[in-house]
Image 1 (tube, rainbow over the protein chains, first blue to last red):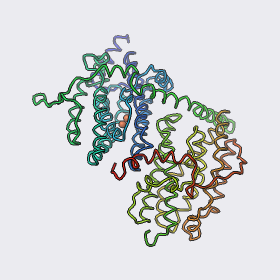
Image 2 (tube, rainbow over the protein chains, first blue to last red):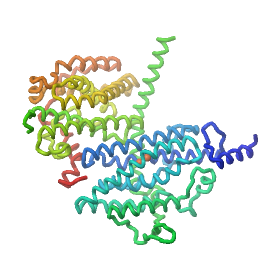
Image 3 (tube, each protein chain N blue to C red):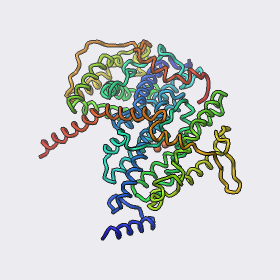
Image 4 (tube, chains in turn yellow, blue):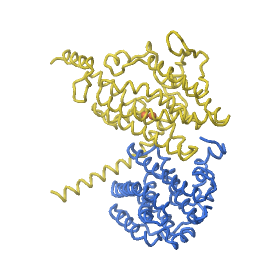
Amino acid sequence: MNQQDLESRFQDKIDREVKIEAKDWMPDAYRKTLIRQISQHAHSEVVGMLPEGNWITRAPSLRRKAALLAKVQDEGGHGLYLYAAAETMGVSRDQLLDELHTGKAKYSSIFNYPALSWADMGAIGWLVDGAAIMNQVMLQRTSYGPYSRAMIRICKEESFHQRQGYEILLTLVRGSAEQKAMAQDSLNRWWWPSLMMFGPSDAESTHSAQSMAWKIKRKSNDVLRQAFVDATVPQAQYLGLTIPDPDLKWNEETGHWEFGPIDWDEFWNVVKGNGICNRQRLRDRVNAHEEGAWVRDAALAYAEKKQARKAVVTP
Amino acid sequence: MNQTASPSLFQFALYMADNCLVLGHRLGEWCGHGPVLEQDIAMTNISLDLIGQARLYYQYAAELEGKGRTEDDLAYLRSEREYTNALLVELPNGDFAHTIARQFLFDAWHLPFLKTMLSSPDAGLADIAGKAVKEVTYHLKWSREWVLRLGDGTDESHQRMQTALDEAWMYRLELLMPAPFEQRLIDAGVIAGPDEIRNDWEQTIADTLREATLTTPDDPAVQTGGKTGIHTEHLGHMLADLQYMQRAYPGLEW
Ligand SMILES: [Fe+2]
Ligand SMILES: [Fe+2]
């Protein structure tokens, strides 16, 4: 079969909603796009452990401490599922980590913002996991089978994270004036970066059209962003917190919440590496990896010795 | 104090709680920084188990005390002089080998001790042991395997593991030296004495070090004091972190 036939058969499968599997033929560009997206997603889970990790030692009660630890651990687990999904496309985790550590691969920019108060553990769960869910629910139906299946597992845990975050804030707004102010401050800092998580507006987005045709993505950035705002505004109202957007208003006709302009200069600045935590996050990951090298080497050497001894005993 | 409960039992429950919380907290410090993702997750698992166990002991202690204090009051509002954990568990994480040495020496005591606690005439303790023993069986399996991997891995890992073991060694015996509150419970038959644990504990350590090609340290020094609230300089810093919110904003719900 020639290239053109292969490609049209591939597109036909996509159009019929048949999942693409690891062993199936696929265009190089499809493979490349997926490797980039899945690894970016995996890196985001792992780098995403850091801002919340910043509060594990300071969690205000034993119950909260355990819940936060379990949440951050889940994100590590998501990283594992996603690295495994990327590996089905013929790249190794080491290769992908190398790209992260050398700054070639990106991760979600939201994690370059600092986690400054306990309320941030609430806002991150509610808004950051909340925004991630919008994207991930869509990705459960993505065209690549292993990615789709990883997403189905991940989504089950994510909705739990979001509820946990919301519940932290609910406790704060029902508490003292100081606690309520802490919650409002946190919303003020995390609201706009959360909207930016969906990426540039559709008009500016370079990868979107092809990804939609391949059904890697199934909804555009702007559609997802709007769905997030519509879902989140009533939740903020229930908390009695004010969303930091003077232009926010309900549009009776469209049935959507309209929101003010996003500061894309800030977005691109952070993407380019100039956010307050970019360098710190990357340094933390690189340090963990480099300081862990002798441990990984030891495990490998031990496994090889054990294998060799077994071979001697059972010829 | 609850009428029938002995002050020693209360102190013992706190001692076990402090051991579990302090070690669980230390392991939690690794979260996001582990040497490889799988072990990051494994350490968080053990941390979660230990914090869960700490909560059971604190809740039991609060109940025994009967003064309306909660698990969080006991964990967050006692000073370092009131914490009675063994010194071993508060040692800093160091490199991964130090974390493993600390964990292994603790687990090697913890598991056989919990096994004896299963048949304690005190139903509260027996109940906690019943919940914890399976978890701690896994902890020992995990830490023992890592002593083997590091000890019998590369030259570098062997050297690091040996150093970590040498450094932790003088803290291990405190676990087997009963504080007055423990002695009273031993005499009353509520918990097992060190002689019931020692063989199992020594055997585990000796077998593991031999298989790991490590040298048993011959350091005669023994450090104690944790059980009477005289700690290393490290604990105060840990509690400053752990208790920060409750100290900065007293009396609030979180
Ligand atoms: Fe996640
Ligand atoms: Fe999450």
